[in-house]
Image 1 (cartoon, helix red, strand yellow):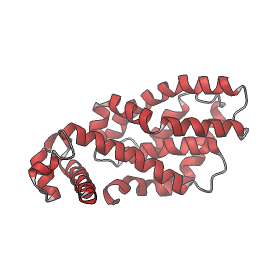
Image 2 (tube, helix red, strand yellow):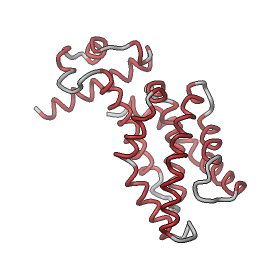
Image 3 (cartoon, one colour):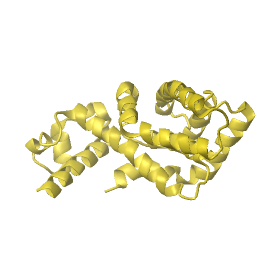
Image 4 (cartoon, one colour):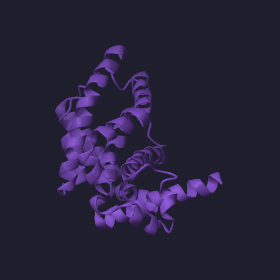
Length: 218
């Protein structure tokens, strides 16, 4: 029974994602989603309280897919600092190709909550490893405090950049522009720009995979 419930939940999420991609999130309802998923109308409410909760679940799935995807393709990376920025890079590409982009851009506080609930602790652990690895110089407590303060600025800048992605801005350009504009780790401007461009150069080949992973994943 649990397996069937989980399967139906996934079917509803995938069906909604397909509909949002084709029709836009403002043009779907429970009837359309259940019909697309080939499930009964009442099945929807066994899993979600309404359409908004379904959008929230799709957003969460996008974020979790990014984490799994990045862990898989960065297994060769010895630089924890690069891993932090690579995660950021793929967020631009995941949302650029995501059917839920418009809804997220209009509901930024929910994405902030998703980050806090699902990625904040992981990022903090990577920061600690970065310090231990000697990639960030200075007092560890001061570095962590600075990152905690700067993180919110970076997040809001990212949320603002979602509107530029909606307007068709290249996600590679958006990533570099957004990230170099925030002094996250006190890196010199030229050094940081070259650092960011090296990430784009190496990982651009994976960008289409992250854009498709949500709709094609099981």
